[in-house]
Image 1: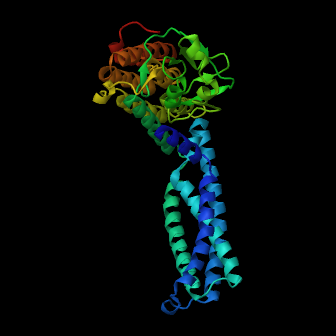
Image 2: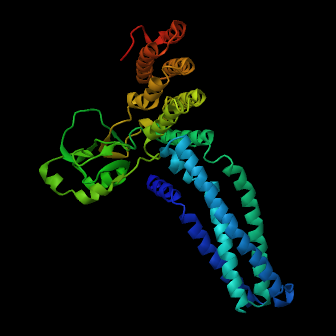
Image 3: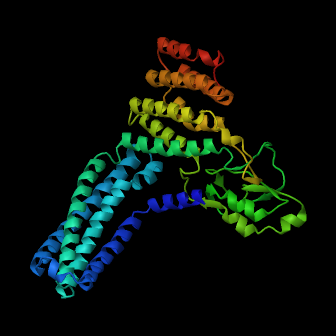
Length: 422
């Protein structure tokens, strides 16, 4: 349930209209909450606030908030375009879900709606003396919130969409996903030991990326006597001929399964997401580095920064397992494969090794990073790091022009053995 709520909140956070709409509703309610003060008998204890004063304040707010909200939208759209063009379009969802920017836009639009509604109601003579005082207090509070929000937002918008900030956002999203999968390698299910498919294949008619698997629904749907072996992890591109899972059991048990309900447990969408797909963050970071190494950009520094980011992320991945990971699986009727270390290394280092082979500073830093990961990781990470070190060396030998530079890379790759390629 927690994972489902987090997944839904993440999708809501990617929609710019949700928070402004909620703030508009709150603003309208606040105007009519002020009217309730008329009925609590405090007319003799509150100062007199003239209607002309309120009209002046609300008119200033309504005119200024519309301008600021328009400016905010333009600045945010410019930042989103910058993030897509300088980093990668796959980072757009992280930039657009920035909390500070969304809160700022919601505050500006909410203040505008509040001032317009309050002005209309005020001119209709709906408010008495206590309600006018309450509306005055709300208006001053709105001014204070708008000013504080604007000051904070100016600092954020100066960084939003910049390449360094985008890399940090992608790293944070990838780290959350990696730690979540590290703490639950099989997502609370039993481990799928065998790689050979068995049982009746279960497919979807949709085409798209598998975004999440509701293992609790899978476990509850199949019932006792049936085992489901998941064949596709989140991030897999699903087609009608690609099984989502294999259902294992006798014919009588299989006939009782509600296939439509089981299909609901596999959420398929047009794009990959960061929450339950730890490899997607690695792919996005690799794309950022690859674009930085393109001849049009020629930014080796960003590629080196991304390599350092990969070292930090894989350092999180190779942390010792928690003691509670040996506990019996919660969903023992579901068999779940683990994320392949080789696949994660392919996602992270293949493009950098290819596009950075001709830059000695990138090739050397890549070998140093792989050597570090081979020394701190488990056996699977050691094999993957050495394989990519040999592959990067082979590419560097073909791309580097100076024999001295080739010797530097070759010396750094000695930890991987003498064989190149692979």
